[in-house]
Length: 602
Image 1 (spheres, helix red, strand yellow):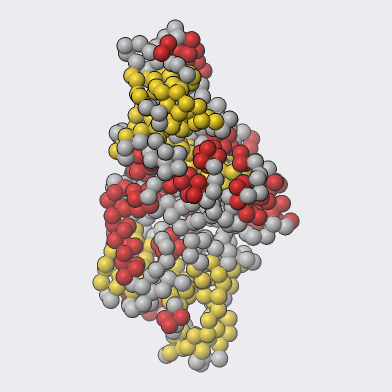
Image 2 (image 1 turned 120 degrees about the vertical axis):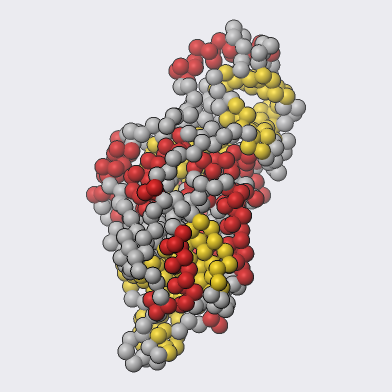
């Protein structure tokens, strides 16, 4: 493994000074562009950028003194020169791609820096899996910093993961070269209640001088929220309304506003800046979770910036939120996030600050994409066999394994139902009055209620939990199964047919993980995810094409939700209210306790 990080500023400083003074020539000069200065929120016409050793040496009205016959010159021709875009919080695994293929997908969109939390693979493979992601990240031609996952399991006692993360793991990882901080502290009840393990992880991070990521998934802004902030998390991306954003920045946190494939939380929060007039330097844009289809077809951080502008944000302020603000938050303001001397030469040329076409992308002083074409290699890590053998189901599943047994003699039951909320991570805790036939609780297709199962897949125990879910709109006999099941990543199966649910579960056991859709007894879509049951090392375009067929298959089964697969994959996320499912049972996330599926019977 090699670290692609550039020569340090200290090592480059003598040459940067010499180039800026005109004593030595630059490696590259970008000439006659419109310099978007995110430090001052100015747009300065007819400026040049001189680059040496992958860093910026000079930015000013005339870099002719930095040019020699050996200097490469790019004519900006009046285009805007903006900093490379930064994603402040995201999970590479959510794209169903390895770090290399994720990088290849986002480079043409102008993303040159990512702050990633690989807590998905941490739940499957533990610290070893984090190291694999970290090592592949360091091979890439863009900056990929890794946050050490904090919560595996995310809710101890409510789920069982393939591996656990400990304070000793966190302390060890803080010495790795690409670790930038602690990943989102999802166990917010643990922090609020002073859990020694959670506080030890935070302490290890702060003692290393690194940033603690937050995750406060509760609408309660009372004493619990204040206790969580006192515990050390420095940011939060779980806000969904203006009041959430304001509360966080008032307490010294950064409000991370996300636009992922299924999360649309920018529009409802950015009014804190556009209407309330709060200081925008404390607001940051991120994606959190982006599906491969979104990356290939719609974009990455360029999509988020365009959306923020469409929501009324000044274009330069929106750019600050995706560049300088992010760098500052992670203690890297002197390293990246702006087009100023000493920083990494991560520069985008674009002809329009609103539409934001990404026409020329430079990272570390090298052209990496032009007009949508990636120009560089994104090296792969040699993923070992143990990373490709993680789906252990035990005995084959049968239709009767997915039956919900009613209490003896009952004709009807009142059952709890997980209610999916489109475009949001929280669910609703609903109830439904359901009939019983031959001792088995029946679904209510007329009201959109079908079944969900959480199938254990880490240790081959043969165990599973059955429940009910509404909101997908499925019709006919069908099932969708996935080994992407945040965060414990067992297997989620949602269906209207017990037979198809069994077929789908067994199919994923055969292929070693992924997503499959069955309808009327036949498989109609499959996305193979052989690495940890979460990722493919195939090109993003190939994965996106299969994922699109999966989306179309879900629609053919009656689903009309936007990015329904993301909703599907989060139904086991037992740290976001209100009702979830785990290998241990149904979870009431408002109380953080297991709860019975059947409330009463008659």
